[in-house]
Length: 214
Image (cartoon, rainbow, N blue to C red):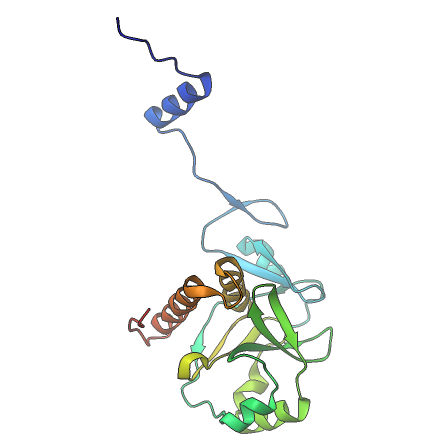
């Protein structure tokens, strides 16, 4: 005699949803008006807290101005700075403890902040302002960075020399990748692979494609 299989009610409901094709994928919402938004959507940043919010296009347009106070719309354009001038001595003078960092002009602090990713998230480094002024003098494009929403990302890991002007949310994306993939004291191979994939995507986005060695 064959033993009958007992199906739990929740299994039956899940099977029916799958059969009917009615199970919906997770939907993202604007964090201001709660309207549904696409997977690719705008972000806002709250300068005082550095908190990022997902936004629909209508809400994002409300804060698309340098005069916006509570929130600022984050741009999307990424530019690789091929002619960026940064010597090893200048880098050392910036007092960054690792070879990966981003720099953003903070309106609440009225100065440039230097931050680097790690297992605890984004850590602020004490930036030598005279060293930054020298760097800005050698690279006038730094004076064009939009405060709070754009950053200079420097990648000098493993002998690489890469410099990007990019939206601040991409910097925090990198921070999140490193934090979520970090294992042990040194990070491990997973975090290294995540970093490599991130910069491969930036190169492809800026027309500098090419697969990096893992």
